[in-house]
Image (cartoon, rainbow, N blue to C red):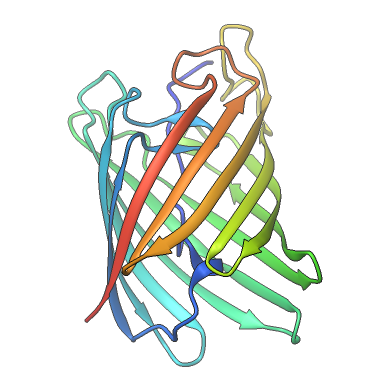
Length: 233
């Protein structure tokens, strides 16, 4: 069946631009012109206010919660997520970030809560930072469907504190009879994104252009502005 589109959280946003060591406790506040992930608006093309509370251990283990307003044209208006993971620097040039997240949607219709595992790999090179990222859920939005997202991304430093990040990802339903997108019952779709990232006076700034292969008005081409600030606690 086809059911409404939601999203995954962005764990540790703007990490590639950070040059300071993270404190044990931190919180990040974000204002965005649209809440999108994988190219699909989670706020019906409207702005979003988001916040996270994170704790990082010296071992690389981290845990946190993240919240945002959402609008799925039903009674769901608030997303609250929790995650637990570990960041590992494998070599001077190779890193890994893996963990599990649980997504909840608050309102009268909250049947879409589900868990998801993720693994992200970073490769530093002369041209910047390349990423291979993967997400897997065995019960996508409570549908009982297996689901995989695969992403390749590259960040190139234009100048100190100025970077471009290009990414391409594919969302793939492993059980098309339980979860599909679009009126044509698509089992997968593609997402393209190009983002300019910088920081100013402690604020992280991102301007991104993105598009998908879906035909929804909440997944067509768009420009998204996000401004965030992280505070050590």
